[in-house]
Length: 319
Length: 280
Image (cartoon, rainbow over all chains, first blue to last red):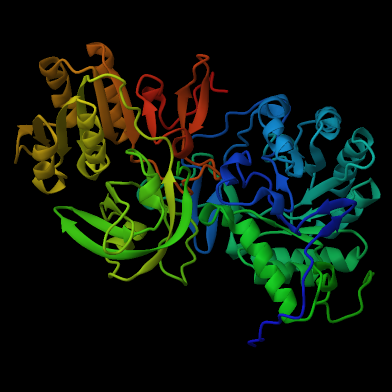
């Protein structure tokens, strides 16, 4: 339906995410915004909800050779092999630039062992200029065990991270949608997650019709982009219905304010823009502007007014 | 000073067939003012309903800040895949997202030196505005153009206006010397006593160019054109090559931001498409 634009509704996009004051509910997703500097020509950094780093490991990783990313219908299949400068490399060479510009920075970390996670959390969580720590449980970047299919293992990781990160610095936990999602989400929250990021794109594989070999040098990759938006909306809705009081960041295929609104309606407090940055490096602020306009059309003056609004049934634990 | 890239909605002004290639002129306000030879534009393809996120990224052939239609840029492409075929067939008036100029340009010499500019097929396109800048600096410019056949050569006529000497090589020997850029370059370097080689083309050609420059004692500035640059801005981290840094250590560097023009002696050409053991 075509709603007339409302001039009389002024939308305030400022968002509280587990105590973090964000200018908008639109973040960048882990690994999708480079070092942050790449976005500067296209994005007003003061109006970026938060910047999430590439997933950092203790030791630097060179990653896989090109090709690392190929277009697929409605998205891309990609795998960098977890290329990153290592936590210390990041703290020395990349964080100061972000901190100087007061970019709210979420540091994404992935470890091979619990001890890795503890060390990453200790150093990342206490570094000046870091707003939050995001735990990547998928193991795909650190080459370690996959923790996010197993609530018990996920809980143990979240527990050590929460213990090492100072109070006042939220711990975000990124989850992979799937049949295990709600149980892992519960475990992560029980062991100290302040925010859940829902979630990773699914794993995919593409073959080259000429070479008869996998297209990506790293063989398998992650599917992302508009193709996965309905998966993300559904996953956010499932977690929100099970855990209505936990703030969620919805991630997966967001390209527009209308996409962001869908994730809010499903129950997300904020959204992360990822693969859209490949096409439009200015998308985080554009999506925020479009979201404000979409909220105004529905007489909603704040993003929080839309959170979970799409659920037809009373919210709560179906179990 | 006007620097840094801009994101604009561009418009196709026209597409001209040039042998096996297509020369595309785009209205892209703000891009030409910021252009330096060697920089890129990233184009959104497929039209408004397109689901293709990855960009088609090309070196700029010509940039005109002013004109009847406002600022325009030209790129030269070969229609080999869906994105380039769509661009080659785009009617005048088609609007498309344009981001640019992107990347690091060709480094210009401080003194009036002798330069060889070598390009393979459509990849030669960005060498022409470079030739102009070099001539303004008093450099002697020699151009070497290569292609599989005569139809694959780009810019032979324009080169005769832009350069002191023009050498042409075709794989089938239909025009000029039979052979490739790599075959012809060593002799040309010796003959011209070139100080700098600027080259654009595929990895195998550039490997040979860098090696020939090294043997001859010339600097080489190389622009790799056969690796897709899906975003052009550096965020996707897809277009990596092993590059030796000033500290002597090898890193997997993004061609779109650390290049597209890289020092030929810094790229580990033999290990292109791999991650060397010692890469950090």
